[in-house]
Length: 175
Image (cartoon, rainbow, N blue to C red):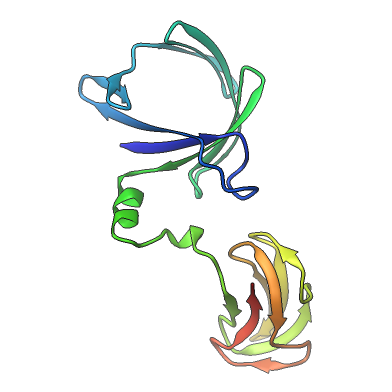
């Protein structure tokens, strides 16, 4: 079973709770919110589909997919929609009060290994997104670019260029 949330804005832009659908594949077909899907889907090629459902016609284009985050950007009849999906494992972890590691809020960044801080690409107060370069740590004659694992605003820098750090030492903190 998949629990799919459909909203008009990307997940990271503004938390939006749109329409939520439960999609389930069983031996006797596909079900949406417990009702059998009796529509028709035709693939038009290049991530484009035509769907007829509940006596309505939909032209759907998959603009972008992120399998790691289980998100998809769709263009449906000229309108942009952003979906996020949770499978059975995600729902079980949520029920147990555990979050997926990719969606957790980050509070700080720690050194993954001992080394020398070569350069810092951010400053206190900077707003950063997941994947942004934060700093360069030199270890064993190799430059390691430390990237952000989430988004936030930098509260404090705990290191400066030229400083030697130990493994698990806090390098910077987020709001």
